[in-house]
Length: 250
Ligand code: GLN
Image (cartoon, rainbow, N blue to C red):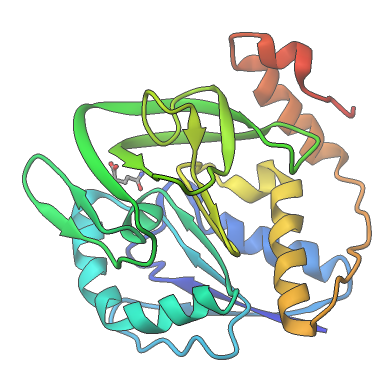
């Protein structure tokens, strides 16, 4: 078995260690004896989505986002086809915003790829800090770090998780990110996957199922250190509703 992972524009979109997500995907496959190949596509490279199993689109500043958008526009239809055919895509912060219709800042309107019918509006106060989510998909809370000026409105799509602490998509909805087919869009940097191994395995399982046409049981890993780190962040992040509810496995 083998999965091919693509990192889109690491020269532009790689804030707060988003690239660590690639290392995590790779390592957790390797530990299970599954082969991996990582392909990095730099700005301006032509992307062939055929043969890709997992795509990472990281976060970036408004300036970088504008530049990247120009390149990505050329790939928009192929990326849309990839998404509609069930391709796994992890899009973080600026990358997540780019999947929508637009991101309107105080200075300009950055056109999105229109892959998801969502939109983002900038406001002067940045939404920054540690964030904790709950989702019935996972036993543990999902923890991360957010720092964005954009507020994303997702209409009737399902959010990735419910915000226990932090902001998420915007100040009012209490939802964070989006789950659509095998697309996970989120504001969680951090990097997300090493802090939340359950999320990593969720993406791996989806990619393996799509490629091999059946559920492939992922061998259990110890994850003691990962859970310790996850619990530490969830506990440290007040209010302590999280403390009482979350499952600490250490
Ligand atoms: N530039 C976007 C915003 O501020 C995304 C930032 C990011 O990727 N951290 O909303």
